[in-house]
Length: 272
Ligand SMILES: [Zn+2]
Image (cartoon, rainbow, N blue to C red):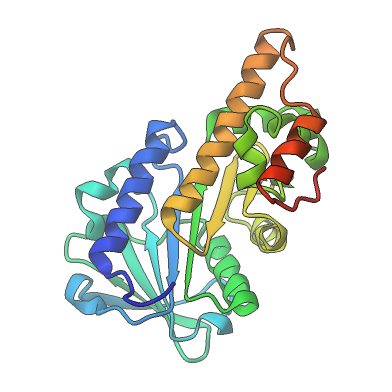
């Protein structure tokens, strides 16, 4: 991201908007879903988040030393962030050893800890920042129902099959996700195994499916872009579901039609 860098109000607005959009597609029931941003420029934290406590990170992240991670609190509802962003968000600053951190919160903070998926957020930010040097990185975990439903069907847990079936409904899906979705088998929420799988799969993909649970999307451009990716795959999954329910009547875009799309949009994809 280039200067002038977004300030807190702009970042709050983008996270609030994402929370409302994810809620509008039913991808964040109750307190499901979480959002974090890794920020490489210095924001004046203590004016908005004056309370501070020290804690040990779930995983050492030397790549994030000196960076700030804006993250949703555990148990907070994505659809409520817009009502009071500072009450629902905290800022984690990573200390010089890459292991200790400070959590800054506001006087009206509504949570005790950051999101339970924080280990995945942190490890993926660190991996992406180390690999690409980006000064901005957004991650969103959400639970879009049609996508999650398909992931309960064994055949759709196979990555090639899943991509072939999802990318056939709208021409823009392959343009937006030319590498397709990555697939992670069911792993315990918040576990080190899920964290490691996210790191590996999000190197190759912008969005990964957590079977029988949800998705995680990343963007080095904007929160809106990561949200868009979730909307694209949930829309594709809804078409796929409709087609299953309708007895597989639709053809979908053929491989030749998809090939014409990627040629005309100059998209390089390993999927065709
Ligand atoms: Zn979840």
